[in-house]
Each structure stands twice: as C-alpha cells, then as structure tokens.
Image: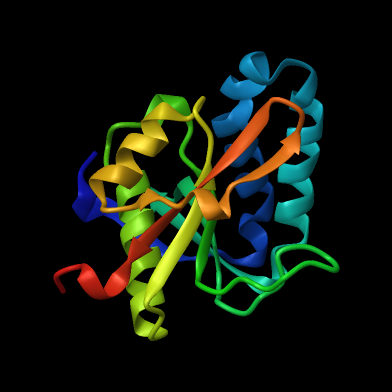
Amino acid sequence: MDQAHLQIREARLPDQVAIRALTLAAYEEYSIPLGEHWDMYRQNILATLASADSATQIVAVQDGAIVGAVLLYAAGTQRAPESESRPFPEVRLLAVPPALRGRGIARALMDECIRRARRSGAPAMTLHTSDMMQTAMLLYERMGFVRAPELDFYPAPGLTVKGFRLELDRLSR
C-alpha cells in the first residue's frame, strides 16, 4: 500500500456504518477459536462502537474508503459502568480487514494513537489482546509494548485477555 495515499483522520458521523462493517469483518476470523463465546464478543464489539463517545475514533482512509479503524480512550475515562477509570490512554478495537493486512495500515493507526497519547503528556499507553491475535501481538511487541499481567482480565472461563503497556517516555521522538 502506498503510504503517501493513506490518510489518518478522526472518524466522522457518516463513517460509522463503514467502521462497524470493517471492524466486524476484521474480528470475524476469531469466531471459530472463540466458539460459544463469539456471540458475546461480537455483541461487545457492537456495544463498544455504539458507545464510543468517550473515545477518539481514528480511521485510515485510502481512495475515499475506510481501510482501518481504532478507538483511543483518554486517561481518566471509565472502562465500563461502575468500574475504575483508565490510568493511561488505552487503545481498543484496532481493526484492519484480513485482505488489507500487511500494508502498514495498523501501524499507521497505532503511530497516530502514540502521537496523541504523547501529546496528552501521558507517561504510558495500554491495550488488551489475546493469544488468538498473534499478528496483532507481534505488531505491538515490535512497537515496544510489553506484557503487563496486572492489566489482564478474564471475561469468561478459559478466556484470558492480556494487558500490554508502552512506556512513552522511553520512545525516541
């Protein structure tokens, strides 16, 4: 993909249908490994996208089409009703459809999240992923994210969602 033609910008209201379709397409591959938990995960994705008011939704656009999306929550925003607030900016639902992966779209979206987190003065940024998302984990580790087991959570028996943290003050500018 020609990075010169990839635009990273904040999502607009008319983008929401495309973002929802793109995100579901990106995560659909996990329906088989998740088995009986897929419907719960799919509903969580849809609920998160529908209530993303407290996040900045960032998209990658090429030739007028949305080719990637991510949510960036600011430090201090609530994780869920009646739960603790995020101590650091947090990335959620990084999504690039399988057919478009390997072209730098996810990296460009993550770079924008890092830039915004640094601009906010945050010392670190966090995210969650799971073992079934090996490609994403490799990207995060190449970018300098390290495992942060204290951020792990367990949405269902046998499912571990792993926390990762990036120390922003250690990155070269």
